[in-house]
Amino acid sequence: MSDISNEKMAATEKTTGTESPTPEIHGEDHHGPKDGPAWMYRRIFGLPAYASPLFQVIFVAFVCFLCPGMFNAVNGLGAAGQVNAHDINNAGTAIYATFSVVGFFAGSIANKIGLRLTLGIGGFGYFLYIASILSYNHNQNAGFLIFAGALLGACAGLLWTAQGAVMLAYPPEHKKGRYIGLFWAIFNLGAVIGALIPLGQNIHEQTARKVKDGTYIAFIVLMGAGFVLAAFLCNPRFVRRDDGTRVIMMKNPTWKSEITGMIKVLFTDWYLILLFPMFFASNWFYTYHFQDVNLPKFNIRTRALNNVLYYMSQIIGSLIFGFLLDTTRFSRPARARAVIVALLVLTIVIWGAGYDFQKGYTRQSTLLDENFVPMDWSDSGYVGPMFLYMFYGAFDSVWQTTSYWLMGSLTNNSRKLACFTGFYKGIQSAGGAISPQLDANNVSFVAQWGTNLGLLTFSLLVAAPVIWTKVKETTDLDEDLKFTDETRADVLPPSALGAVPAAEAGMAERQEKL
Image: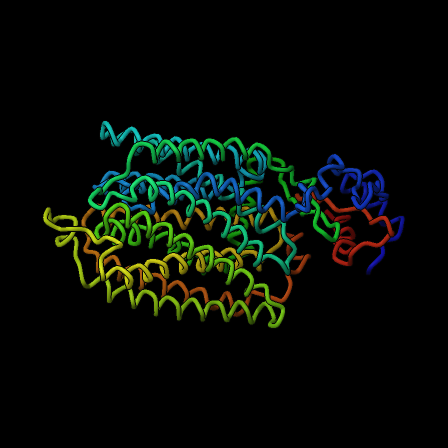
């Protein structure tokens, strides 16, 4: 099934809206009647072409570098650089509460208004939230802080859904792991560079416990740049993979059908529910890391250094696991099973070491003791906690990278993936909304450590049956295309040589039925 007859191609053209199977040729750039301008497909200075999946994934990574990456840098300081975490915890609950609601519908919104607008709106809330922290630094206006947090949650739900759709739908199957790893590395590089800002400003402050105004102002400027950058995302219909195939973009014509499609995912892909605990756990541990380890135990310059090391470890972890998940030495089902076992081992080892550190201090002996002197990086006992915090960061990126790779291994349908990532971010944020309230209500540090270990272990055991039975060597195209009765897929016409990849030919034939 490597060739398509002229009659069959003509029938396909009526279905897909193409006019001619013969692409224009501009040097090495092949583009058909629905392609964008020629410059989109040219490599400039050795960089990937603008309309290539690699460039677009990197592009979205830099938007996240400037928006959520900088947000993570502030958040990772513990109490967002403040001394008292109570109002920051309440703002965090507001963020993730609205995030969890919008996340369930963000896939439908993205399908309706487009990925570019979804990404742009998503970037808006980040710099407003940091502005509210700057305001709080002077007037202690908790109301504005919490409002900005709620707005950020809504915006973040949109941004991360657009990001997930690009990262999972654009790459070819055999490169999804490395694209995910590359995205996570660039995104966390933003947090690393962002963490260097308070480190540089407070490097000589051995007794300070909160950051300066200049730190927040720098973050506001960088996040504003990310918001503007989002406007230059490429239209998905112009994106071409290296083999000439288009991205399958599925859209329903009405809001009702979009919402119906989102609900339909839970019936057609019901097994996804078994991954929900894994999604729920993926943001739960941030409160423990930032508010219960970094904040109470260290002074501000050491918190800033820990933050840098935390996100550098995320980069290393995401790159290593991203490339290992794409290795061709083992089948994809074998890789999926191996990574779940590896996550279980890492959970037990890293969090077990965390307990050994945690039992050495309490809330009463640190935050509630006026005479407590926070640890500095010059202290003799710092090296062990430093490495523990680095492993916490690496663990986070491995968990997130694996979650995205698993979702990408279940489908290539971008419409379905938008729903998958919407569910992922929504449920993830529900966990992120509850966890700060444990800390805000002064639940003991060791109890919060226990909830993390228990939830992480339980979620892996629940997810195991899905990994063992649903991850296949390749995603069945028929399953992707029959997801909805009202779909439209854009298909690349034959190449200049007149040949069409087998998968494209099969998809074109099946489109006649749509």
